Image (cartoon, rainbow over the protein chains, first blue to last red):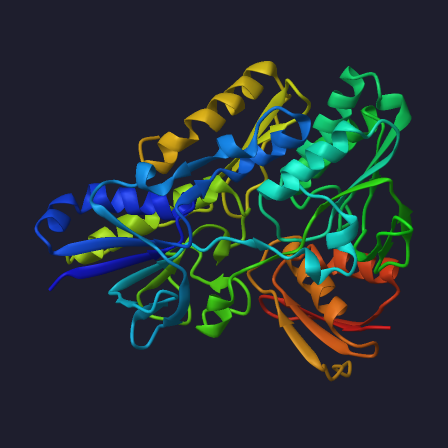
Length: 379
Length: 79
């Protein structure tokens, strides 16, 4: 009997996990006792953190992708197809192409999707840098933006890469100063809760920096509608904010597969240590789709993938899994065009904040290039 | 003994850390009609402060905060 391990999603979590399993179970795979299959609805993986740099002309969206076939171990089967249904009782995944794949162990790594349509007027009136088309369009818009009110509004929470909205305004401030345009551009940053970031230590660190840079901050700001003609944001709190260029963090959602399979309302309900689904046997979730109390970030997907690969490998070998995820999260935070800091924390921890420096910015740029080694399971 | 309000909607955010429960509440308030009573269950003590602060800002009514052994139940009526 071949032990079938099926991974839905070929992003960071899915590829790190599949490659780790290929390493852990190499001889079992070679002997035909185990098989690892990754299902992805396209041939490429996209490195989303690179999109932050696209609006400032520092990277291109084309450079932020690689063929999955180059990233996956040769012992991993890649199925380029779209999963259309999960049967957790019958333990199978239906594919758009007509097939269905049986599994003994299923890992859901389907990530998060942008859902700008959820907020009336946002798709027409707002820009974003969370996807290739959005980042390209914002680059064009920003290149011609020489005066007016630039508003960065965090609308969707939870959202991918929680540091990115702060990074964007710090970078925009620096970029506009270097181009001699800052005096003609007012910048406002809005956040839904009572402070400038979900993590209190990050908010306490960022607030004086935003003030120093003359970036306005609006808290308890939950946009309810965008009027693209009048260029106004209206909030649940009854406030209005005019903008000339709106950069929004759009609402996020997960694949319908999750709610249809009863794995969770939107995100997959999991045990936060073992990452096993709460509503199905032999199903795990990693990365943005897993509902755990930490950031939706690439580093989380990376560390979770290692834990789940170890747990599945132990079970295939008939051993008791012992590997657990402690919430480890690492995020770089750009504070301008040539300085950055980073945070590291686990479940329930508040990160220690460090002063930004050029070497950390260079480390971030270096990591952006070496990320592909992470996807391959080498770093 | 206080009279526990009768909720129309229960929102269980136990286990989520700040600002998860408040964000869950904001998301739910967006979905429901005015006059809906929401019961928010939270195990994060910070919710006792940040939820009333947001309700005040957004103009919704705080009906009651009940302390239980390992969580709080916060009752809210939307306006």
